[in-house]
Length: 256
Image 1 (spheres, rainbow, N blue to C red):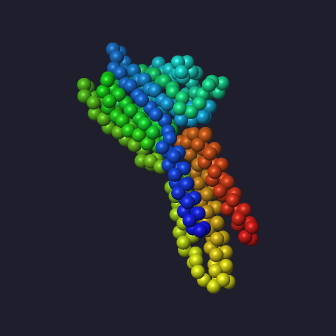
Image 2: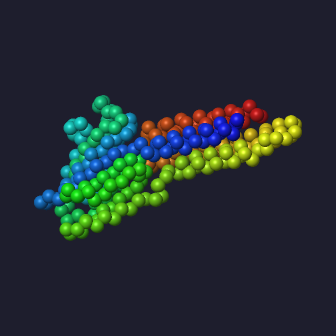
């Protein structure tokens, strides 16, 4: 029965991690060639409740405008290509549409895009032609689309280092260790032997679980500082794994 419960918890954790990755931004980008410039217009449907929303804009951009429901917003440049908008005081909710517009030089030969958040759908159109489309990209993925003369050569590059955040790999490792240890412990022995082995095995299991959960928490903190995960996702993950670690430590104290 205990093994079934462990497997059930493992499945729930895997599904919750997949849900976090799958539910991201939706970005529709239109690139249009004009007389003296190339104009980029992005419609971003945001899945977050964070007050500070971050956008990535190409380095050569000018005439940058960020609007929300038709209202132009004040923004702050917080990095070479990153801009932050504070939404406090506005009627801001999940799946809120933002519009970004900016201009690039007329002879630009590469259009670049880096994703600040997990993105479930990304489409790019150039002068009326759909040149890129896809989905389920994690934060940190980047794309380069080469525009050469009258022809379009699409070259996409994804930062495979971020295909899955490190905390997911560690979480999977925690699950694997828990499952393996639960099956390694013998299920049928003499009563005294069974009690002793079960006690030792349970303590080893809890110590392993606690150590791995602490690593998960450290990695989540690191990714949050690097702005690879949103504040909302960070707090949800931190609260969940911190409670798991506290429960493990309480059980260890009770055993001692």
